[in-house]
Image (tube, rainbow over all chains, first blue to last red; front, side, top):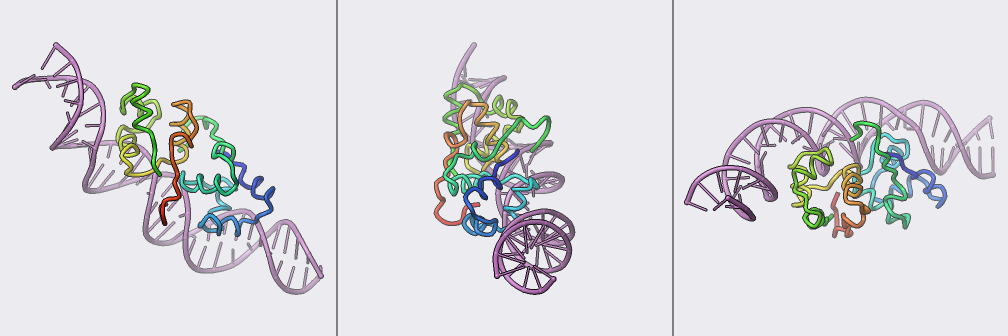
Length: 70
Length: 70
DNA sequence: CCTTTTTGTAAAGCAAGCTTTCCATTTGTG
DNA sequence: CACAAATGGAAAGCTTGCTTTACAAAAAGG
């Protein structure tokens, strides 16, 4: 799973801290998502999409990860 | 999070076992999702959506769960 | 430069997603 | 009815998502 989180966040001029607060998660969670340390839960993905006024599919890219990605 | 999984699955005439196999999860996972015991990971949500040729948003309904739903 | 703001990242711990195994109940169908 | 197919669901165990705490580095702005 790839995502355009950092790109979209910066385009909207908000920092990790603000985004985290708005989404009710920690700054570390946002950083971890942006740097691909793990994927968001579907609930968090929905919150992110709603925050940016976009669909989940526009932000998170599922590309048939060659083989076994959980 | 609510979902229309059972409804959509039946409409397409596939049973839990077949769907589970196609998605590379167990039948119990499908049953648990249909009966709301837990939410899918975002990866599984993408697989489900792709399997049915729909968007995640058409299958999973995030309705601002009154208060703290993870 | 110097200070503040923002970001990266790691470790430990808890909660949620998923598997495996197993059994019970329901729903066909002959 | 009898038997098979499909579904419900529980318990234990492993993995992943997220938090908390903490520190370092980078970036931004005087």
